[in-house]
Length: 193
Image 1 (tube, helix red, strand yellow):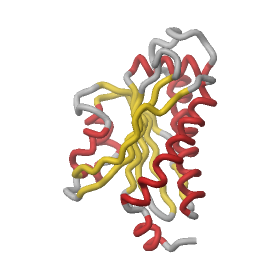
Image 2 (image 1 turned 45 degrees about the vertical axis):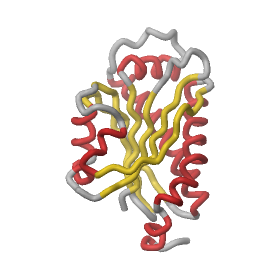
Image 3 (image 1 turned 180 degrees about the vertical axis):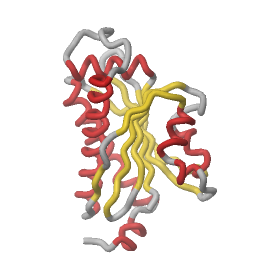
Image 4 (image 1 turned 90 degrees about the horizontal axis):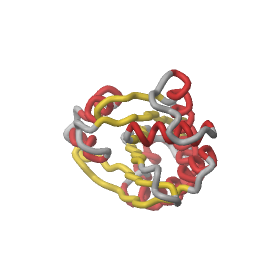
């Protein structure tokens, strides 16, 4: 098992590029299983930005989204964010609950719980793959669901990241359903410690 300092050195851009693909594919496999739909990765990239500009990895600061946030800790720490347009989040809830698309029109307590579980599954599948491949221990926090602008969500869950001027990099993943591309979303992983 690596020490925390060794783990931090290991989690550089080169290492993350190697882990991003397998972790992301596994995360989307978990999402596919949960919603009983084949979902495919449409884009995967590692992007470096100044920490204060991290919202650009999700979208424009003023875009309204449903965000599902988890932090992770262990040999290294960081943040995970899934972001969907509200209509897409409603469809995800319908698929996960096995009800006709278009049934969900707002996010009550139960619907937010379903989305939280989706975030938990995707985050856990990703972290388990990365942890196994890197020989590390990574644990996710409970998920938090928020409906707001990208800027407001990122500012509330990652204020310490956004306040920094240092460059950081994130794994940005876009995905959609195989049929009709109904589900499109962003999956962002930011290792910070």
